[in-house]
Length: 177
Image 1 (cartoon, one colour):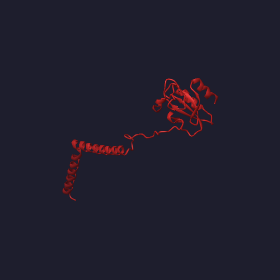
Image 2 (cartoon, rainbow, N blue to C red):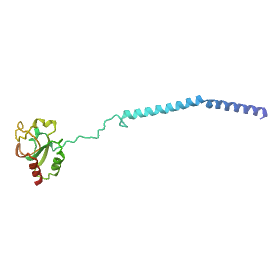
Image 3 (cartoon, helix red, strand yellow):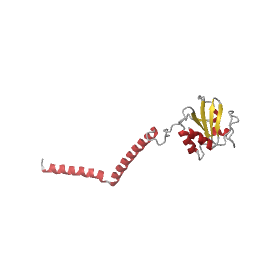
Image 4 (tube, helix red, strand yellow):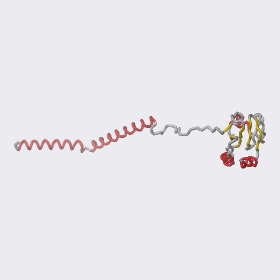
């Protein structure tokens, strides 16, 4: 290679470098490339988030169905308290929204008699409002039965054979068992 060719080759390389520098040295061009890259990443992020929200993977708009409804087989409504399969059993009716609810709940939890099942009735339930009265009237006839407060009933078949209507009687009954 002669000197002239080398000079031409060097000029060509310098020209190519200058063109490459011009492409990436222009501030507007660099800023535009940066904006496009951010836009693409943002678009991918939005699509990813949308897919996960839509599929329910993140649980943002889904109901949390972890709560299960439990049916308490010992809880009765007054209207069906004579419909138990047991021949002889106890029914404790009290207001579960009352301040003495914890006390009555403890009495129920401590009941140990295995010969008679113990069921309970929530007098504050809307299903039992027809049986609430000023005074407690104990009757095996549901049309006459009224509760003015807590009561413990001993039931045999479809008849109330014994009742405890005062707090002292109820506590004494549970204390002896």
